[in-house]
Image (cartoon, rainbow over the protein chains, first blue to last red):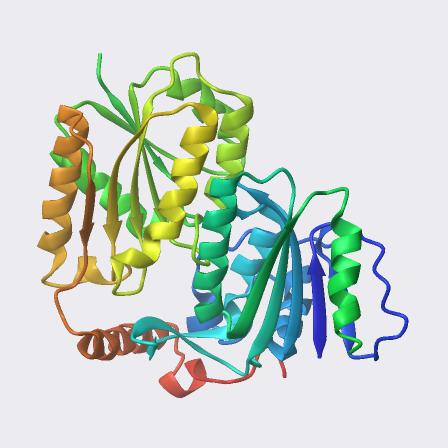
Length: 171
Length: 202
C-alpha cells in the first residue's frame, strides 16, 4: 500500500497509479491532540481511546510500505496539522522498549517497513532545514522507515514537487 | 526583580511527570516561581502573564521526537502576542528512552523559536528514562540536576545538563518492561494483550 498524507488540499495526479495509493488530506479531518494517557498501550492496546478521525489514519500508516508526507514547517518541526497526527499514531507501537542500532525505541506492532519521502514546504531557513532533517532521521527509527528522503520547497511549487515524487511511483 | 514562570506543556499536565519535575525545581529555586499548565484555552492568559517574569522555564516530554503539539501551538500564539520585555527561556525536557540525547532535536526546535522571536536561550536539562526514574532509587540523580538547573537560572550562568538512570541498556529494557507490565496490570490488561500486533482490528 502507498500512502500520501498531506496537511493541505492538493491536486495530485494519481490516474496512472494502481489502486493501492491512498491520499489522506488531514486538513479535512477532525483530529484531537494526543492526551498522553497511554490508553493505546495499556488499556486498549493498538487502539486510541479518542475515537475521532485519527483512528482511520494510523492503520493506513502502519500498512503502507511507501509513504509520502507533505507538511509545512514551523521552527524546524512539522507544523500543527501533521504533528498532531504523528502524535496520535502511537497506537502502532507497544509500550515495550527494544534496542534499534544500539538505541532504545518502542517495539512496533504490525507496521510495514517503509520507504518514506517527506516534502516540507514554506519559507524555511537553512537552520530549520537542518533541524527538520535531523527530526526526520530521528523519526525513521521510531516509524519503521527503511529509507527516507526530505525535499524542501516553497508553497507555490508544492504541487509540482509532490507530483514529481508521485510520478516516481509509476516507474 | 528576577523571577521565573514555569510552564508545563505536557499534554497531560495535571497528572504528568513534568509537573513533578516542576515541583522539584520550585523546591530548589532561590528565585520566586509561579507555575502554570498550558492548555488549549489559556494561551492568551499565559502570554499576558509572561510580561511579569524575567525568565521562563518550559517543562515538557518528548513527543514523536520533538516538542508536543501542545507546546508548538502555544509558541505560535506567543509569537503573535509577544511580551514587551522578553524573558530568558530555559527548557526541562524528559523522554522515556534511556538516552537523554534523544531530546536534542526538541531542544534545537526551542532554540529556533527563541532565535526567530528574539528571546535569549538559557539553560537546558535533558532527562532520559524520564517516565520511570522518579519511582526508582535514582530519583536523586534527577533532583541533583534540577538543583543545578535552578542555580544556573539564579546565577545566569546558563548551561546544558543531562541525566538518566545509571544502568546498562539491557537492564533498562528489563526494568521498563516490568514497569509497563505493572502499568497494564493496574488496568486489568496482561503483558500478552499489550503485546498484540493488531492495530485497531487489523
